Amino acid sequence: MSGRPADDGEASRPRGGDTQWPLWEVFVQPASGEPHVHAGSVHAPDAELALLNARDVYARRGPVAGLWVVESARITASSPADAPSFFDPADDKIYRHPRFYRVPRGVRSL
Amino acid sequence: MSEVDPALSRAEREALAELALRLGDDRLILGHRLSEWCGHAPVLEEELALANVALDCLGHASTLLALAGELEGRGRSADELAFLRDAREFRNCLLVEQPNGDFAVTMVRQLLFDQADLLFYEGLQASRHAGLAGFAARAVREIRYHVRHARAWWLRLGDGTDESRRRMEAALEELWRFTGELFATDELERGLAAAGLAPDRAALASRWEEALRAVAAGARLRLPGAGPLHAGGGRRGIHGESLGLLLAEMQVLARTHPGASW
Image 1 (cartoon, rainbow over the protein chains, first blue to last red):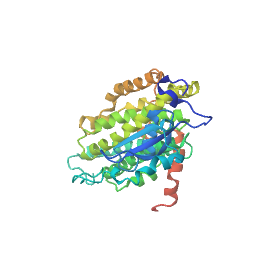
Image 2: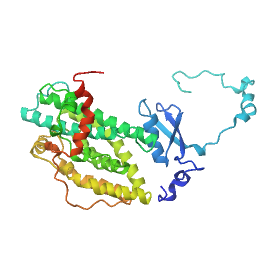
Image 3: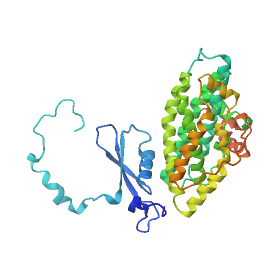
Image 4: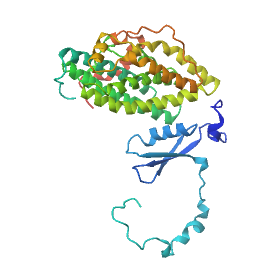
């Protein structure tokens, strides 16, 4: 793929001695209005092929309304070591949870 | 599609049976060729993609051969047509039976064929035969994806490395001569076109070439000039040696255990 124009950016180049194409995370939306849910990952040399591969690997059986692919390297993740300070404080303060109102009828995917 | 359409004359029914056989054999043979990539594709994701396309093709073949058997009225099922005919009775065009070669050959074959079939099936949606029209509408959606997939590879391999480009050019050189047959019509198909039962292939050639030229330009590939095209005997059952080998493998199980089901 070295002859392709630069618009594919970093995605065109293999990384860190890995002979595989870059990794892409796949998010599948089961129906319109539902959230996109992480389904897995695929290798692909660029975004269009990542989308096609995601379609072939994760969307060929179930009903699917939408697909996202994101190059894995572009995701910033929290570290497991940070978990106590990142996540614990939410638990003991009940007022942080928006539970004090009724969900309108007919709303299913909140 | 289960009962014979009373609006068809006997001659029309026979001609439609033959057309369904041609279309079904195209899809069956192409699908089998693609399935030969199982376990050999360059990467796992592409393996699944090729298998998906192959399964789409087999699905089309299954519907079309069932319809052919029904219109023919001799009680032959889709399975019997697929597994118990010899090479001389197959009606597929020569392009689809060409061996897979390398990945470039497979992708060139796919786009050359599917771009033509896409135009044909788009026209077939307007067929007077409701079963065929309905089937065409379903098939068009799937074939559009096949075209998108193959086109993506033309762009990347044609405009890729020196090696990938060399292979794409060799594949085009090898397969181009079989494309004439994609638009060759005979009395039977001209009759079906005149009766509003199927589109006229000959009228699709210029749009096909236009679509391919656009892809080739994006891929920085040059399509071979209008050189001598293979006359093509596929529709009359005159095939290359490779079809016999393909059928031997495809049919061996069904012929070894006649009537078995699993």
